[in-house]
Length: 486
Image 1 (cartoon, rainbow, N blue to C red):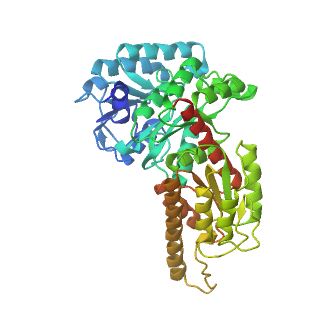
Image 2: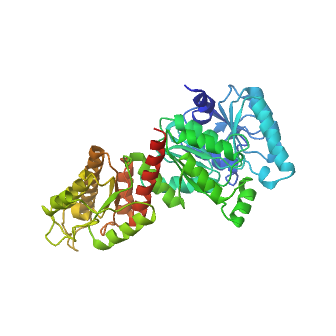
Image 3: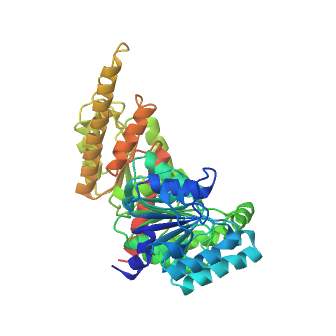
C-alpha cells in the first residue's frame, strides 16, 4: 500500500464509523446523513454520539468519543460550528485518523468563522487526523458500502470518481452517470477544503484501481500552483475532466460566499488546464459525456475523423460540429471509396460523411464502419444512427402488452449485441468509435433501460451529433497530451 493509500484508508475504507451529532429528529442532518449511512448497508460498527439519547435509529448511542468501545477509523461530525474544535480534540485523543465535517458556518462567512476553521484544522493536523469539509454534503465509497452523505443517493460501484466543491453539483454529476448505467468509485463533496484539497483527492484517485476517470467541479483553488503540479502528475495516469465555475464577476463573488474559494480568471485557468492535460467541460452533461467516453474508448492517433450516418442531415451537422471543435473531416482515398462502392447503393454520395442514404441493406452499417476504421487517413469514426444495424420488424397496433414487453427486451439485447460489434472493431483497429443516435421506438422507461444496459458495459449513446464531436475532440486532446510526455 502506498503512502497516499494509507493516508486515505480510514476515510474511504473505514472498518468503523463514529457519528457525532447523531439525531432521532428526521428534520436534522444528524438524522438524515446517519440514516443514509445505515440504509446504504455499511458493514462495520456505527457508533452514534449524542449525550442526551441512549439510542439513535436503533443503535446504541454514546455520550462522547471517549466512551466508545474501540477507536473508529472515521468520525462524521454534524454538530454546531462553535463546538467542532472541541469535538476534533476528543477525536484526536481517541486516535481517530479521519473526519468528515458536514457542518457549515466557517470560512465562507469570513471574519471570526475563518479563524474558527483554522483552529479546527490546526488541532486535527497536530493529531495527524485528516479532514473533509467543512460545509460539505459528504463522501461515498460504494465498494465499501459507505454512503455518508446528505442525499439519499446510492450509486453502485463503478469507474467514475467525483470530486466537487459543491455538494449538490456533486450529486447532480453522480445522478447523470447513474442514469447512463455508470457506477461510482468515489464521491467527495469537498466543501471549504480547510484541510484536504481537491489535489489531495486527485492524488489518491490516481492510485485507486477502481477509478478510471475523475470528474470534478471546481469554484477556485487555495494554491493554484499546487493544483497545476498535481494535475499534471495525475493526468499522466488517468484523465481529469473538469467543470470550472466562477468565471464571471458574479460567479466569482458567489464562489467566495459559497465555499470561500478564490475563483481566478478563466483565461489563466484555461491555459493551466491545457498545460496540465485537464479536459474542460462547459456543463454537467458534457462533463458526464466526456468522462464516459474516456472509460472505454481507444485513444485516437490524430484528429482525422470519418463519419457514418444513417441520414444525411445528421452527417452535415456532425461535419460542422467536428470542425468547430478542432477535428478534421478529410476526403476518403480511392481505395476506401471503391470498398464502399462494393456494398452501398450506386447513388451514395462517395464522400465523408458516408451517408447510407436511408438504406436498409443488411450489414451495410457495420461494413461501412469497418471500412473507415481500416482507412489509414482516419483516426476515429463517429457513427450516427444505429437503426440500420437492427432488424426491421414493426409491431401491429393491436399487439398485447406481453408481446410489446418481449419485443422490447429482444430489441434491447440486439442493441447491446450491435454495440459489442462496434467496440470489438474499435479494439481491433485501436481507433475510437463514438456513437450518436436516436431511437424512434425508445421512449420513457425503454430509453432508461437501454442507457443502463449500455453503461454497465462501459458504452454510451450520445443524443446529438454535437455531443459525439465534443467527445471525439476530447479523446484527441487527451491523446495528444499523453504523447507529449512519451
